[in-house]
Image (tube, rainbow, N blue to C red; front, side, top):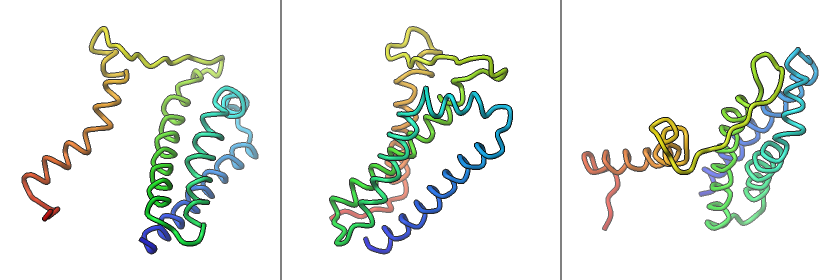
Length: 153
């Protein structure tokens, strides 16, 4: 448990450093997209990026892992928060990247459909996301039935 959590802390340091460097670099170079990107980062998606992704997905698990006498419960919470941070990072890249138009003229809006009324809203909505999220576990279960890698007593 200790060695794995130390690896995770090392990778989190690298990830947080790269994210902060990317943000500083984009602000320093101030390319033409920076004005609209800044309004998205510091305005429209501030809670998604800084509160949910950076605070709950990076800073809180990093702190939990650095506290002395690491327990299994605290490690489980930290790992769950890291996974939440990865989810929020992907959400911000995909949904946040679609928030503004290529001409930088304005914002677009996305509302995830919960109840599908055709195949497109099924793929782009909650059920499509649920299937994509659950598929690795289903594949792991199926592959484990064919070639057992876990032995239970």
